[in-house]
Image 1: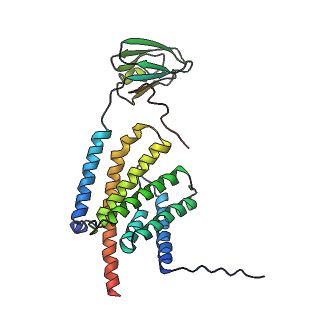
Image 2: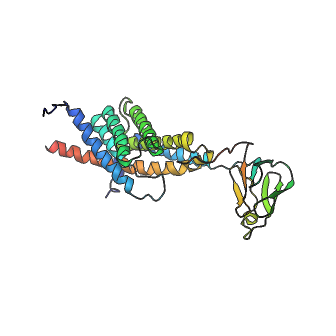
Image 3: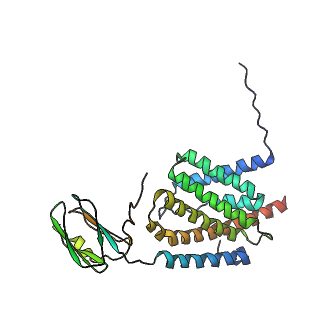
Length: 129
Length: 177
């Protein structure tokens, strides 16, 4: 079996490389999995141009969607749906969004909110072939 | 009818490259039809051939075998010049470069396992970077980096152990002859 005498497959440099790689992976976990607060949100609705919203204040936005009016609340770095004319209210249950890269949406009403740490951080999220 | 007489003279090195490239291409094709539990993660068995050739026959032969493998497999799979091919090439070039550096360090400190881990990590990092620069320019892509690097470390370590055993076995055979 491959597990027998596995120690003899590694010389000193190999062990060093292995440990260094482990260290690199652990570091990359801390570096790439940290969360960043968002400062802007982009609200997209079917009839109007995308609305860039600064999250540094308190306000309730009323947005016209495909079914009716959705209400979106902003308070100090957080944003959420408070009311929407959809059937399941998933958007409201999804709750507060506050991290860079977060996304929430009311699909029946065709309104989406994308959070970012800069005004135009999210131009596009993928290119497909 | 006059039959054109074409003769290509080959030397020992050409035949080695062709043989090992054919082996690597077969493994690559076999691997491409294996279902993967996580998209983007493959065991990278074709790269074991590159590693074996590097240790047995040197870096230049390994470069030839690896690049031939990428080119010919893409032609056979129909992915030539597609994003798959570009990512494959980026990974191969990055791992060949780091293997070239590690192989030419005086005293040759690294065994097959160390070389394999270095190559696997370089391969993965280069592919993610290429995907970010060309296809998915969104920083969320790097969220996957720790997962992919862990997979590269596991497959690199196991691959290195395999190559080490293969080299031990084949050198025992050689002494027997």
